Length: 112
Ligand code: HEC
Image 1 (cartoon, rainbow, N blue to C red):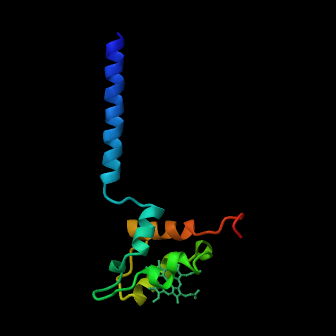
Image 2: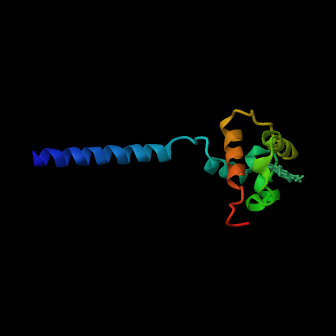
Image 3: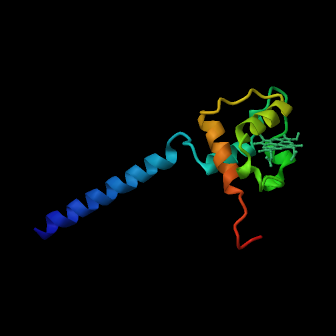
């Protein structure tokens, strides 16, 4: 019946929207976007730290070759050390997101 179909369609749409809302509100997942957020967050440093990655690497400046670095995680932790922060475990959501963000800074062939 026509009415039923419409109602089912509406229900499906509602479910999809509800799912989307849930996704947006969900806790951070491993992503370059989360990495970028962390990149600007002084909380990666120790108590009293006011610098973020972005203070020394504004908008990722100087990091366009970081994606090539086979010791990227160690480099990131070195810099976190410079902020008096605690090294991130290599398999943490935070480290993986920072690495994804660094990789996203890889210049595109058209831009360079
Ligand atoms: C106090 C300033 C400072 C802060 C804060 C800082 N960095 Fe750095 N970072 C440097 C310097 C200096 C280097 C060394 C530059 C070089 O030798 O190429 C560097 C190098 C790096 C490299 C290696 C680049 C490459 O080409 O391999 C990465 C990756 C990096 N930083 C990421 C980060 C991340 C992520 C953060 C935040 C957690 C951060 N940095 C915070 C100063 C800083």
